[in-house]
Length: 298
Image 1 (cartoon, helix red, strand yellow):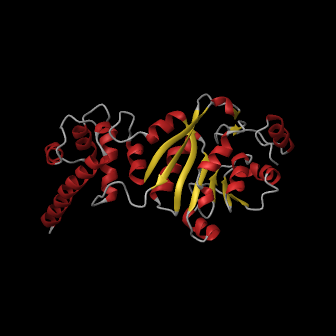
Image 2 (cartoon, one colour):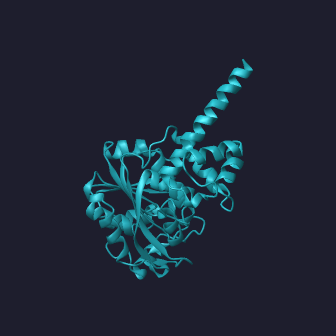
Image 3 (cartoon, one colour):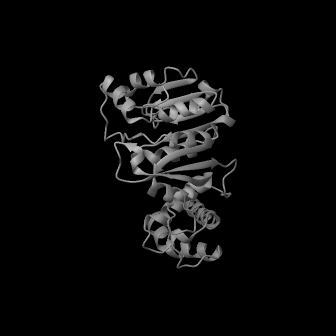
């Protein structure tokens, strides 16, 4: 079925299967015929073992991915959409639908079973309410994924792709740049969906780095430092980090001075390299403090 962006076709299929949109699941189906072919083509799915899609809806993007990828595995949470997808994708013998919650599914195991552990491309029209959690899970688990091409709310796209050191940058932006090279591919107007949302969207692509953008001694502590710096954006990064990390302000200030960073700097002005330097400096101080406590107990 190739007319999945046609409103009349969509309504016929949905009515036939007794389907009604769920606001709770953020369901807005694409009706712009030019969007999904571009997403599929730019996803890189043709250059790897296949594509993993999250939230296929009625299968518009799924069908396009099936035309460029060797195999497509699509993860759908809504049980009600399974009969719809069985009809719309009946001619796609290289598509498999898995009924699951992407935040609960063992993605590493799924890729190993479905693609032999080979590298895949992720491509999805993500519901707005789970955009950041899904992207961060895909990045943090270091799955065999070459790229993540997703449609998200325009505001989220700007935030996710904001470069560290830019005003729009936040903790999630810094994390994205640590793991990947993000870019906004093209915009998608709200009129491209049924029902139409109240905001515009954009398609972004995150090319996964082979190694992180910066080298840090302790990765987990590095992200603690980044989150702490952005936790109180109205304050200087020194004050925000001292308040959030529980490290005395003089020690935090000393780490800034050692890294050659102004004590008046705010989180959004810091680069990944500066965050890395602060992380290593503060991490050494915290480790020393913990060792002293152990000695005092003994």
